[in-house]
Length: 338
Length: 185
Image (cartoon, rainbow over all chains, first blue to last red):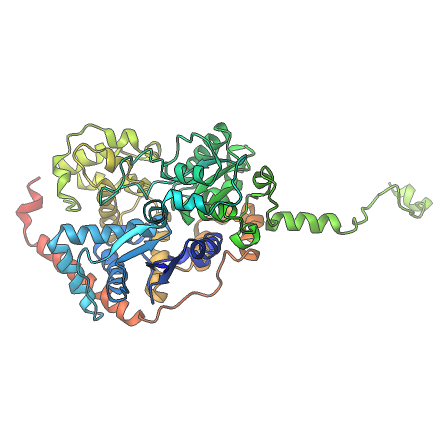
């Protein structure tokens, strides 16, 4: 029987993190996991609402926890695939457990919408934790039909899964090896990546590009130095920053990096023998094709590659002054004007 | 002055926070200096500093802090305070937050296309030309939803957030009515 969890996808799953969504939909049924999406969930507030009003932010998250408490169906675990959503949900749950006053205030606010939340009644966990702790590395290894040997991957877990770690689940908060282990069990060559839990800058690309682009640069340069073909992430925000803003970073620092960043679920799908087109490949800005070519997998084209192919297939436009083309001789009076 | 984390009072000024911070180079004051300023009651300096706005909330300082102070939460509280009093070093960050939460107030969810369009037209016009190629890729590859998703329980959410605002304002009034409490520092 399938293991069921409540699921909080988060706003980016339907937009910038679409490849994550695709690969989760493909991979989880293979592991006999069913994710029941929380009905009518709202935004977690990302890193923005806390800076406007901490209490309103907790009430906003509280509504999601209250929904999860109502919609428990044989499970009390709420899974978030996005590290920012995960930490926001976990923070409010941890703080209402810790402070009776906050719990009273959050519940007072929730009651205005006819809702309530019992502190601790929902267990918030990141999708990576589900894979490592519940499914287990050996079980994942059992599903591998196409080991990723030859693909060098930098395990970039990002900051918010092992930190702040409200429930003491992580032995190492700065250098956890959970993602390394998972990728090793897919048969991949995992490089030693010292920036595994460094921050991607989050919203800094929006509010202070000098800060944000420098943080992205550090991640990419270190991945290159360690010999990786690609970075692997567990968060749609990290993916967006390293993928979309890599060009602007190159421009800003006069550098020329092409480091793809992939979701760990995309790589699980590949190792399970699923076709790349079902796993959201091709949606990235920095193409994964050169990386996947190392293991003989052909990934779908990115938008830029499609445009290049289309341009190459089009007949060349005639250029003015092309000496290979027939042209009338200049008239004598025109010559005189020159 | 800022009651975000009572453990802040136990800060031993070791500087581990600033030494761990990935964005300290862009801050006016290191986190340690901010905590010293809070303790010294230098309210204006604290609220005018860009330090909270440069915090990336990666929690590296928090897990290394020997006193286990939730430093990013303190930074969040400082941002909220500075925004309330409309004294921010730059409007780019507060505007981004405001645009972001305005969509939550309207739809219950974030709306990436609207957010990016509004924010870049207002603050990052010069960055847009360099983003065209990648931007097209985001659109054609289905990574930009052009229709916002409205949650069904929007009325309930609005009532919840309004009630939270009332609670918060009542708390602030209570603090304000005890002048000896803060003024003594």
